[in-house]
Image 1 (cartoon, rainbow, N blue to C red):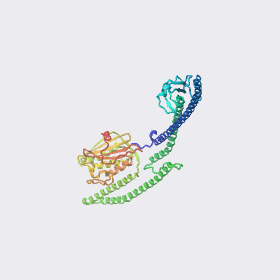
Image 2: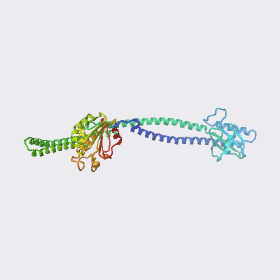
Image 3: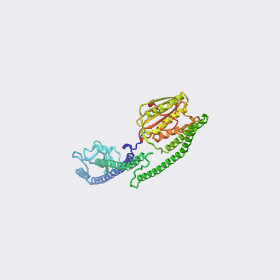
Image 4: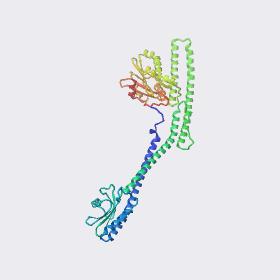
Amino acid sequence: MSSKTANPIMHSAAWRISLWATLAFAIGTMLVFVMLHRFVANDIQRRSDAWLSGEVAVLGDVAGRTPKDRLYGRVVREVAELASREVPNKLRSNGNENDSVFFLQAGDDGALKLWVGAGDGTPNLAAIQARKFVADVPYDLNVKGFKHPFRVASVQLEDRSHIYLGLSERDELRVLRNLRFRFFCLWLLIVLFGSAIVFFVTRRMLGHVREITEAASRIGQSDLSSRVPTSKRNDEVGHLALTLNRMLDRIESSVHQLHTITESLAHDLRSPLTAIRGKLEVVLSSDLKVEQSEPIVLAIDELDRLSEFLNTSLDVAEAKADALRLSLVEVDLDELIRVMIDLYEPCMSEKGLRVNLRSTGPVTVLADAALLHRVIANLLDNELNHLPASCTVSIKLGASENAAILIVEDDGPGFASEIGLQMFEQRVKGRDSKGHGLGLAFVEAVVRAHGGSVTASNLPTGGALLSITWPREIGEKIEAPHSLTLINRQAHANLA
């Protein structure tokens, strides 16, 4: 798994922030438009209703005052046609007829007495008679043969006849349709423009955070003197950079103090141990009997084990504190393991142990060669010291795109149950172990210092299995749980 900080645009925080901001802005502006649209529609209808109510009252008054003679129909029709011409901003159909306004007078028996408008008025009268309406209140009327509804107002005359004045809602709907179209175009333009601005500003702001992250990721054990870039802006990003730099100052000082302490401790302890060993060797070189020289040899061996214990303890402490100094070079794991097996095979054969190596070929990793050599030596020492005779050690080496995978398993008794989850801790060992409990702790500390991971398990068929996943490049970091659990079967199968 790579730890690269560069993300695709679709997965960046700037994209998510701009997306949510755009969504909120789009919903907000849409709600504003809905309210505006409703206000405009109500205002247009209110104006239309006011015009209808006024004109139908005038027509009713003219019809009531005009004598019911041969000129009645002509006078009322001319007044109705004059009223229809007073409607502003009305579009007419392709024909010569006025289909925007109609005037209709029906007798008390419901028969059509007078009609002014497009057609013969029969559909209009049928629609009026079919609809229940409240007198003196304009209402919507759908007439067969007309695409758009009419807004109709009515008045009752003294002879119980009714006058109806209808105004087509075609132009009102046209105005609202144009309003919706223009607002949608403007809304889309503003949303896209606003989204681009939010994305640009957010991406530019987070770009400084990304620069800080990339600079911080390049600061490792060998480059603690580097610092993240700062800016002159007195904002949150500038404060973040200053805080990280102050934290790095404290870390560099702590690591420097740790190195000073460990080096002083190593020097103060190694010097007397080396002096004692030298004196014992001088005594051993003199003529001594066998029974006299044997305790001296055992004492020298104990001093060597004590020196090794001291070196390993200090290395583990530095690695646990992420202060282990690494000299990274390219190392061929396949070649190194073969050399180490050749070195340990005589001792293992003498104890009755067999070693099998299954490798996919050369596997190059970037590592500290000396520490990697000690890791392999610790693994083989662990097998040599804890396996009974007639056991087999199987070593499998493979590689994926980003990591090298080393699996060491055996058919022995497995890890002691009492060490449980603490097997990678210092001085944790089984009851029958004669070591110091630093082997696996050292392995885990060195692997983790290189960005790798270690897992261990007891096989269901018996025996122990330990897997090391080692990154092949700088910057790769592989996480895995350190516990007594079965190893990932897919990775195991790839090496089988």
